[in-house]
Every structure is written in C-alpha cells, then in structure tokens.
Image (tube, rainbow, N blue to C red; front, side):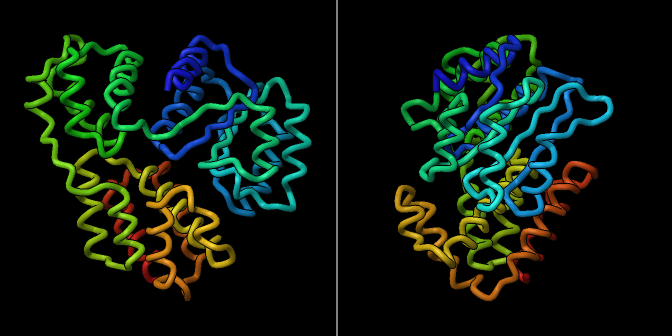
Amino acid sequence: MDQYFKELEKIEKRRTAGIYFLLGNDLFMKQEFVSTLFKTDSQAEKKIFHANQNEDVAFLDNLVSFGLFASRKILVYYDIDKFTSKYRNKVLSYISKPDKMMTLIFTAEKATNNFTKDIVSKATHVKVWTPFPNQYIEFVRKQIERLGMNATGEAINLLASMTNDSLYHTFAEFEKVLINTGANRKITAEDVKKVVGGEKKYSIWDFLDAVGNKNFYKAIEICESLVQMGTPPPFFIMSLYNFFSDMYVCYEEDVNKLFGYNWQKKTQISRSLGNYRDANFGKIFHHLADSDLKSKSTGLLTEELIVPLIYEIINA
C-alpha cells in the first residue's frame, strides 16, 4: 500500500517512469493510478486498450506512431496477460528499447506466464490489491490526504467501516459528504453520519453473479443499488469484461488451474459456465466495447447505459 501512494506522489511531482505494471485486482486503484498519470500532462495523447485481437493490433500501431499535435503519448493496456499470443514478441521487442516520449501502463491480476514476467522485469511494478480489512481504514486516510481534504480520524474510521465493501463505494460516499458539507472545512463523524447510510446490500460480485445466472431482473435491481452507491459506468463495464473474458478462457482451460488462487472468482466462473456455453462471446465483447464508447461520448445515465447492456449480454 505504501508503495502505491509513493508512486502516485512521484507521478504528481512529474517523476514518471517509462513503463508501469499494475498487478492486482482493484479497479478503483488502477483507475486512480491511470487518472493521476493522465493529469500530469495535458498535452500528451492518451489512449486506453482492453484485451482483444482488434485492440491488440491498434495498440501495436500506437506504439510506433504519434498524432500530428502530440509530442508525448500515454498508453494503457488492461489485462496484458490476455494479449494475443502471436503479437507478444512485438511488445517485448518494443519495451526492450522504449521511446522516451512514451509512457506505458500495463495491468494484470497476476503475472505467471513468461510474457507478463518479462514485462514486469522491465517495468515499475505497483501492487493494486484491494486493501485487507486491517489496512482499509489506513488506505482511505491516505487517499483523503492525497486529495487535499481534511477529516477527523473518527470520520475516516466511520466512513471506512460503513462502506468497506469496495473502494468505489467508499469514495462515492465521500464525494457526497463533500458536497453536503463543503470541501473547505474539516469533515467530522457527524458529517459522515448525516450523509452515509452505510447500507451494503450488494457488491459488484452480486451483480456479476446475477448476470452469470442470467437473472435479468435481479441484475437490474443490483445495478440500481450500486448506482445509488455511486458506482460509475466504467466499473460495471470493466468488471463485466473481465468476467466474460475469464469465462471464455475457461472453455479451453481448467478453471481450477487458472483461478485456484482466487476462490471467489473460481466459484463464480464455475457457476456461470453452463449458462453461457452456447453464448456468442463475439457479440458480448462487441456490446461491451460499444457501451464503453457510449460511456465516454454520450450523456447517458448509468442505468440507461448498463440495463440495455445486461439485456444484450444475457441474450447473446
């Protein structure tokens, strides 16, 4: 955890590395890291890629080309461990002699194959695992300090204990507290109590379970609950993408071999495999990519974006 914040501090001081490898499972931490890096250079060309063959080709093209008006480029590739095998040597060849005007961020939940291990060896390696319960309050405190906000220890403890199902939930509620109290004064436990209900009825795992079970109405119910907690569209889309990408791989590989290190994911994928055995995964990934584009280019509310996406996925 300390290393994570130290790297963010370096980035904010513009002491950036050429290649970062974010290893772990927490999407909030990953997106906070990416957002911080993006903010350091307003003139740089910035692009985000997700694992599929079409994106892989585009990513390789971006490694060697710059836009007309950009002197620097920041590229992010989520789940690099799923990068197309036949193109992996090109990535390794590039990172052996990277362009000084390029910054790369790779992410993966684990780095066990030679490809990811080779990247890690050339990168600044940052752990982005969801904090353990005994570390959660300290993480929240450090993040609030990073944001330049002021809160009492009691307020931080209360906020963390009431919302510790996910960092997204915690900081969505914290934003509500700031709106209600104003960001220019010290936040107290009373301020937190007025705003944060502390209800943790559902988590993103419950949402994925409902989609995995093809329970459309339950998925909508959980989606609406998560939206009320402040969960943004990218978190839904990225979670669904990872879920179906892992499921797709498990039709060829043993789920126990792939995810034995993560019992929760192993159980969830195992329960869902039979329900999507005849699904068109090409369509599923297409709908996810389309929804991701809409989330960045339209003013659709989260429910307006995610509910149709759930329907399309379940019926693919």
